[in-house]
Length: 158
Image (cartoon, rainbow, N blue to C red; front, side, top):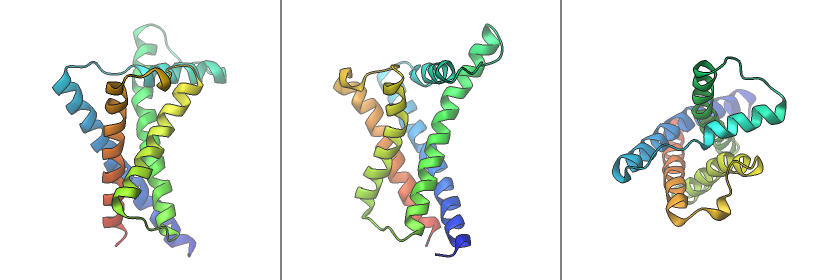
């Protein structure tokens, strides 16, 4: 595959990942609205743990620092979603073709792993202790992400 075509596939994947991330967020907010559950603070806790582990300082104090962490948590999710989409675009550009349900499951699973494995590795959460409702609250939006990302990617790469 010519480099320019591969770059186009990666760009299409990144755009598809952004669409998938929007769908994931919408599914999450819908779940929160229906069940009346609070937002998760694990993305922010992960940012804090990563900064501590890296020896990095998040600037500011009090509310200013808290607001930065509150922005960095969701931003890390956007970066994961766009990055997994770009990877899916690269693989599609290289010729990988899977049925939509399987591709959506794999892409959604990759995004879920990209979010949950660092959290578990940093001790922010332990997925082994999650009740089924927590697995559903995490898994369903990631499946929506995967299906939307793959669907949009296919549309962009026709």
